[in-house]
Picture 1 (cartoon, one colour):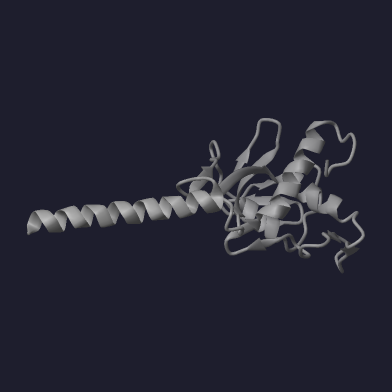
Picture 2: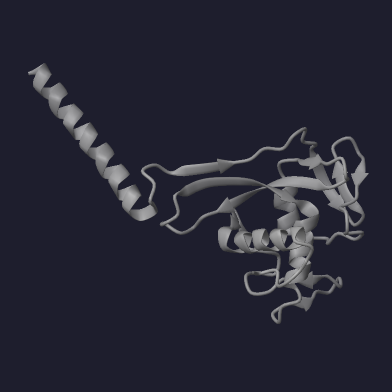
Length: 182
């Protein structure tokens, strides 16, 4: 009897595993959920930011290159500095941003990527050039169609807007030639 129970338990377990993997393959193209995790080299904890830059745990204030005046509120900046920042030899600041892949057809369930904080802020300023943008009461441009401070939620940055950011970064790397959304 124990052999029969063991045999049927193995068959049931195997069937359920194949059913789960099969459904996941049909929906996402991958038999298992995937993760994409990047890390910072020598991260430094950031406590907050002020108009002139990011305030590190040791009290130093580091300016964000190309941004002499930071906004009072920014979901994007909060997310990018929440896991600390990496200060590059050239003064660039890199943070980690979690992306939310909301589509059920996407095999990526956890996505944490390195983001240049200066480029992130510039991206939202560039997005302000679109017809949906406007100046807020502090004189900062607010981005267009998604939300005023970027499409950030409890689960991370909405991957569609994050994808637009990566197009922008490639455009910056090409010397700002052509359209940034190409």
